Image 1: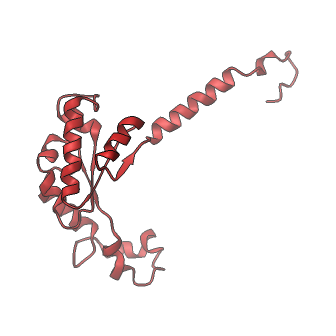
Image 2: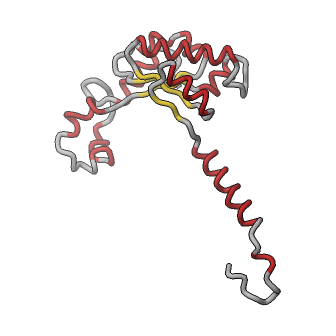
Image 3: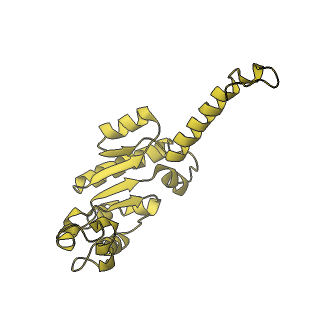
Length: 173
């Protein structure tokens, strides 16, 4: 979550290695460098790091042009659910004022030359946001996908004929 350009600058500092940032060099021995098996990792890592900040409040949307202008911020992800709550429309990311704010946000991010993205599980609305300039859209939520698959599996099992076998006989399960 990033509400101001100052916070965005702090985030850039945190993810970049010296001299552009303050990230510790110990991670050069970690997974990102394949445990120190990537030749020249520290010399090229800053060029390969992608920082995506999240704009999820009315404060962030009010500061969006300044946030997106920060050197080192590669993209801005708008969080519709939290934004809707911040705007007073809890649980209603499809409220017309929220949608208008998101669309204006996408335009602002794009005008700064950065990639705009958001989460939208409504396929038609997701396509609208892409048409308005969103360059990346999360269209699924892992917990919802897992929950839906679990419900479908339970429903298919509940409707099977396994319970029709006589007592004492193997039902094949």
